[in-house]
Each structure stands twice: as C-alpha cells, then as structure tokens.
Length: 338
Image 1 (cartoon, rainbow, N blue to C red):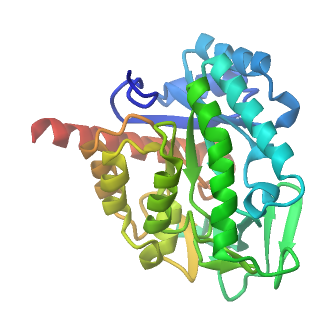
Image 2 (cartoon, rainbow, N blue to C red; image 1 turned 90 degrees about the vertical axis):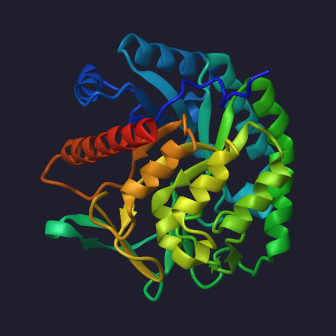
C-alpha cells in the first residue's frame, strides 16, 4: 500500500500560508499568484473534525487545496518536551488533533519540539532598510511561544539533560505514531529555532542537527513522521547542522522524509543572523530548489518570515512566491532536460 506521502500528486508545489478564516479577497489573491495549495494554523478552540472539514471544503470551493492545518496549542509544548505535569493531557490533545485531521481528509500538520519557545532579539534592517527578524546570541535574553515568555538563565528552574529530552521525545512519538498512521496524517517536525546546542539550560539536541534528525527518524520509524524542512533554520545553524541544506535535502528527501519546506534565507549563520529576502541571503536558493526537484519532492513549499516590504504584507508575499515559482520552473526544466 502506498504511504500518505506517495499518494501526493508528484511535483514541486508552492503554497501560501493563509488564515483558516480566509476571505474571498484572500482566496482571490492566492489564485492571482497562481497558487493552488495552502497551509493554515488554528488553535484548540476550533480543533474539531467538523471545523477542519468545513475549512477544507471552503478552500476547495475556492479552488485551493488545504494541504496542512496546524494547531498552535499542541505545538512547541513545554509539557511534552520537558515531561512536565501536563504532558499526558497535551499528548491526548495532540491525538485528537490528528484524528480530526484524518476525519477531515487533511493530510499534513507541522509540529515543533522546543521546550522554551522561539528566540529572537531586536528586529534589524535587511536589504533596502526592510524590517526583519534578527537573532544575536550575545544579546539573547528570552524566548517566547504564544503567551509564555522564557527568561535566562534557567527558563524552567534547573538544567535538563540531553537524555531527558530524548526520553520525552521517544514517549511522544510512541504515543502519536499509531494515531497518525490510523488517521493517514503526516507529521512534519520543524527544526529548533534558533538551532543552538543549549538555550536556558535546555538542550536543543534533537532537531538542531542532521544527526539529531537522523536518530529521531529512526526512533519514529514511521512513514507518517518526517520533516518540515525549514531552509532558514538550516542556514541559521550553518556548520552546527552537520550537513548543509542541499546534502540534507538529498538524504532525507531521498528517503521520502521531507513533507513540507519553509523556503527562506538568512544573511549569515549563527551566532548572529538576520532573516532576509529569499534572493538576498547567503543560501543558494537555486541549488536548494534543484535538490528538491532532484529527489522528487512532492509536498509543498511555503514562503516564511518574509521581511516587511512596503506597507502591505501581501507585497512581500507576492514577491517571494513569484521568485519561488520561477525557481520551480527552472529546476523542473533542468530535471526534464537531464
């Protein structure tokens, strides 16, 4: 029997990040950009099979396939990552999310496994003075996720060991694997952002390197559990990742383990980076798109963390998607001609 990934339509697909409550203007904007797929995020208040199905149908009626739907309330959860008192309740909530996706016929969801959130420092200027997210390790004092703020030096009152982090991941994956497989849903695990070895006395030892991902995929041992390959995070990590983005795509993509791609660029790797326009960083995005085409990637690629462009966020979205579509056309043509 074909895996959920093998059942996807072949070919590179550029998708838009959209609201689950997208308006007719939002749908028109996506269609005008030539986008036929989308991903969206919701929260626990709407995590039901009926809502997920209605959302998928609204997108379908607008001519757009809803490829993935995330639930922010079961994403980056400290209780799961650190084995805190609410762990089992959060895992059961995650299972309900997976079952709702399966019932609604939505094939994919993104998951991240950071115990103390995403860390940034002040926004900085990138090309043309555009405001963009920055991270400077020397200036970092706290991380955030949703309504939580995590302060240095000990974000959770003590140091955690790598063995604890691996133990809690193994517990999570053993719990959710059979549910994902029964539901026919793919889980793509996003890299730690930023991918540094330790933040706030919590090791980022799993999803911050090639070797960590390799071990995690071996533990998961499921066609339904793979990678949300964030090019930006891979570039942030640089040499810390163990293998560069192209080599990692060829390896994990060749194993059908990449389910979704966040296509973004940064100016340089850690310890200090600024997210920049997709055509303005140190990453060779043409080679990266070529690697995705070479391995026959059939998930979706989305623009992510776009610097502010002009006075309307749609400007940067349109610019980035147009650039991505041009790279897809180039990469596809080169594969066909080879």
